[in-house]
Length: 485
Image 1: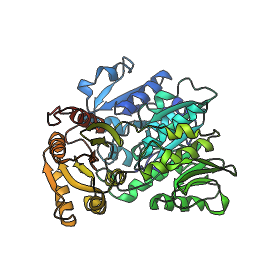
Image 2 (image 1 turned 30 degrees about the horizontal axis):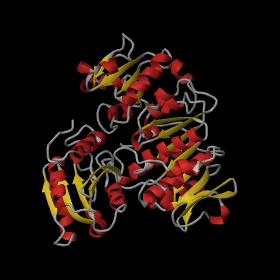
Image 3 (image 1 turned 135 degrees about the vertical axis):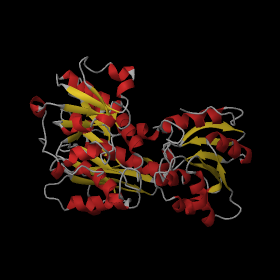
Image 4 (image 1 turned 90 degrees about the vertical axis):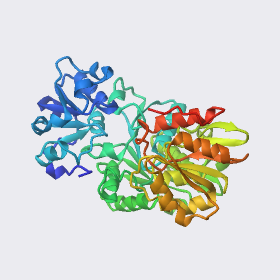
């Protein structure tokens, strides 16, 4: 049950905040970053609630400090009866609704609401929402930068860092919310309706969370579920899944206006959109066409970042602001996303720790010169098809280092399709991978961390993994192990 089935739960009013006045026994599930934001939002409006968290006996102090003194805190493994009696459960993205006690409570009709949905009900300013398997953090940050350059009070939040529930306070007349939205956050939305919504792409990911790829796609598509006339939907038509969603949206009565992005073709019939023609980024909005900049003016490398730049510019225009081409051109890589962290003896070390699925690793490989990449793959397998990397590895790479839990499986998947002269080395961890790659690299080569896996076999998250790579690459002796948390 990866996506909440609304027919299984008691209805929640689609819009507004008045429903809070009638609620008793509100439960906040999970006190991570999103849960804390939801708890603070509820407490600030006088709503009594309890908390369910696996760390109930040892909550971090910064989590306890935001709770009213009389808040009941229940351990997750003892919460079945408590959750079953709830009038509403506000869930953090980390809560897997297929697991107990959540699945049983939903089956009994207990309504669930994501932190995103709760916070949206307090939003009075325009809201822009971005989702996709890959690139959503970059586009979210880029849109925020362009809006700020245009003079707006741009509040960049959501899955990228600050929860929406923590960003809604003190909204101004010129505030525009720019929200990165994950499939996990969309699982339990009901009325969520962005003024402008974007779907960049949908490629296999989180197979450890969803029983079927169709469930993952359905969660992503919920970003458009409540949009109607006057709203805008931006989709990358070069992505097959996003193109299929666009086709479905086009058949909806009173649906949102569709704004396509493509590297291959302009929108049909002179419609608004953004595209690439003769290596020029072009934007058409409100019937006006303008050339933004040349492809080689972008600081960001890779074709996927051309798509990201087009999508960001189109979203800013759809929000009624003029995108500044110079701000677009100079936008730097976000940390852990194709980030050059060191150069030694002509060898470039690139940190793409955020490449946590196969498709993002493929995009990272394509950003570099053919045959010059020594790529580090591995971590915790999310169900990726590693063999699908073979064509790109044959073109772009000259060595592969497979690390961590998934290392042996990656090597087994790749070796049959790669030439015998391309070494595929199984190494225990990131430190060993950097040491081996450094020893084999020549001037002009790139040592690329693009794991195609989650980090949780050895690190708390992709950021910790990327920081470890940065330290290893920045040391004169990269083999020294400074293991990440």
